[in-house]
Length: 383
Image (tube, rainbow, N blue to C red; front, top):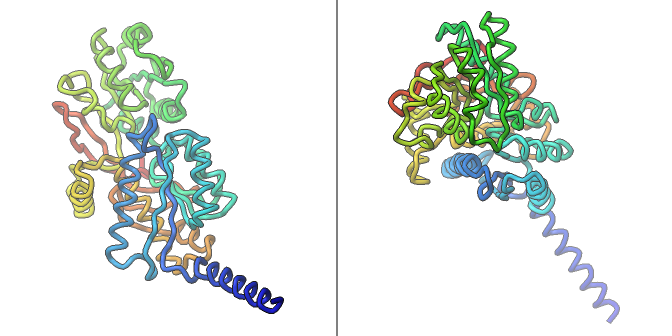
């Protein structure tokens, strides 16, 4: 009886050992990549397309043989746009799902939370769309596919000077938004260097809906340009009210404007003649962009926006990093490979600077008759 118990115990330990060997990175036929976005919360309009784009890229790689002879298994957790849920999502994927890389999140708050956890694990992480400047400085393994808020402010200032010949400017700032403040501060600093006078600076709160009274300084100074560095829902409220009280200057915005033409509907007069910068446009006739649009539309039944394009590029950058590294076993080797990567993406030809921010092209969009029209593209590193 005692021998039988010992034999059973040995067989049990052998079985457990075999199970663990089979789940190790070296024996697995898959590369487990974690992902977390907001797909049910207040910012799901960003998280859903970003997640869709990442999934499409992974599907395409799997259909053409995967990476390093392995299929990519994408394991997703919804973070609802909440930082505590983002932390839980990452821990679940890292601890119980054994992911070796991570894609996400969409907004800066949840991304920052995840990045602080990913730093400790050392696994490569890339966010498609979190623009807060400090995020990639959290750790050498943290990357992003989008340009940062200050870069947007600098680009918009240079565009206002070189292309619009602006001499005076006003800035509207959502003082509860890191995104709005980051763009605005860089814009104000850059226009000062360019000789454009800041004649009005107006702050508002995220919950504000009536802007007419606080827009008085802008009306009184009649600036050539008015920067509104906020998301499209807010822009769709501010612009009509500004026009109603007689403000005539040209509106400028960042990538958060993507979607404003759909939000504002048929009465696009208030935003016609405005300009904003974005990561990509469906009007780009390059083969990679048009193929992406075709494939995304076939997969999801709708035209991809910039968040979808960034999600797609983020996944590709990660997978190309694995390919360039030639391994999935050594995270530091993969991180170094991503740092030195050069990939032709939907949002431009992408390389990384020393802070793991992308160097790539920027699309300048003009709103004409309620439609987004590509005005020009230029390299964001050559403002």
